[in-house]
Image (tube, rainbow, N blue to C red; front, side, top):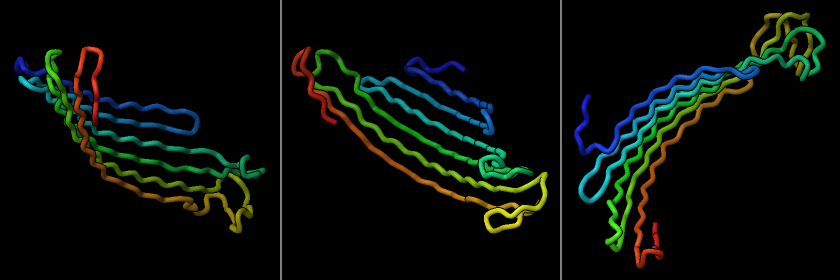
Length: 171
């Protein structure tokens, strides 16, 4: 649609990328909102992002662990999600003004989860790590982890213009 004339910019981008490298597979989805609006004394800028990343790994650890037969498969995944938002007000500085300013706030909420398993296949029974591994036998959980955080920030800056060449910035 048509934006009002005082909108500086408006941009909404979405992207889904899938790729692989070696034993890793990646799926990344990012949606970014970038919005700006001009007012008489300041500009408003809003930046938001919603990110999801999913990484998988399937790798044969046979040689690394010294097994001469069969396959010791390590598989796992990592999933991370985050949402962030930043709101910024920036003064419309005119070279005849003594000062300019900027204030803003930022927020992020993120969560991640991952796990890794190993299992043995395509070989005779073998003793490994105090266990008897059998073809198609049980999976051994190496790691399961969940984490998350929430962060907030506020910031500001003032610039004092003493001359055209001398400005003091405090923030």
